[in-house]
Length: 186
Image (cartoon, rainbow, N blue to C red):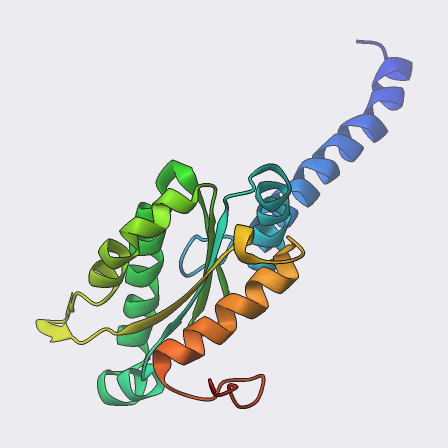
């Protein structure tokens, strides 16, 4: 290769290397480093497509119960193990039918394409509540799950589905939740 061709190609090589680095960083930003699940941004992009394409999709919101107590009692490494185990179990349940993500802290989210999958929510709940073997101990795990079928919403959109799943999750916990007191039935 002559000197002039080399001089012309060096900026292109540098640009290509820089572009590859940026692509890797963007991909890493869309994955949670602890669990390997998609982060909020990465999950939302995929979930929006599923919601648009599948009228029978179901959105789940999950929260580990008493997570602070688990961290305080067994240590943060045990808490990390509990988060990773929850992510693995949730992703396995979603399998090729949907996508799981970690919103942050001890909150997880999933969307599955087919409402028939909700018939297996008890399988997911049992899996998520199996004790975790860690450091020669069995750690107690408990997860509250809220679900929302898109077909049950007036307007089928991810934001409303997440709000309904959030309300259902807090109802499962037996607490008021973030959006104020639950209405009482008359």
